[in-house]
Amino acid sequence: MPRTMKSVVGLVLATAFTALVSAAGEEDVFELQPEIHHVFRPAEKMPPASFSKLFTLITLSPWLVLIGGWLQLGITPGKVISELVSGSTVRTVSIAAFVTSLLAVEYLFYLYWTQLNLFQTLTYLSGLTVITFFAGQRALSSIQTRRISNDLKK
Image (cartoon, rainbow, N blue to C red; front, side, top):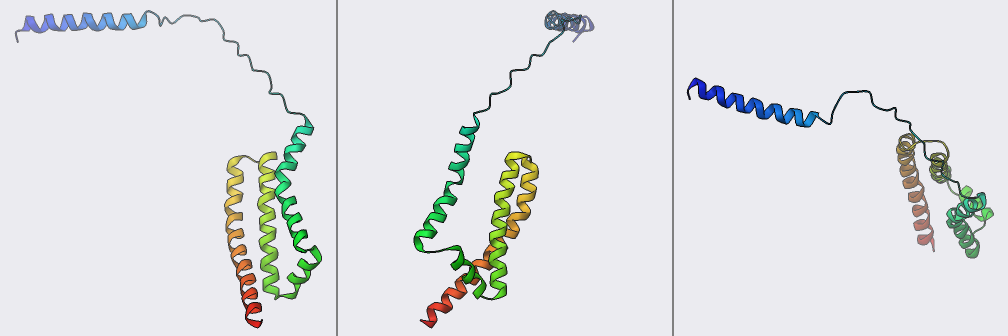
């Protein structure tokens, strides 16, 4: 390609590029803009306290159903404690640890709703999950062993 031809092609490309750049920059003028005033939206209205208490009761209702079912079966706290204490110490400790770890998970969920964030809750929950798993495995194994030994005696 001759030198003049390269110059003409370069000039045409430069003109096209300049036109493209200036067209894009026409609306983008760097000058003082009006100040932006942010307006916060109004705070969300909280439901009435009675509404919140109602849903708290609904959330706790499975526990009430469980306790009601136990009472219908004749399982009372006195029977449970005497049955728990009558076994071996290892069995008693493993069952108490399992129930305590379940209560700790419930309390952690309460803390999540009141003061912890998700990452803090998941950190604590990861440790509690391991404890609950092993305590539950040990407690349920000891209950099964006792139940099997009672069935063999009959």
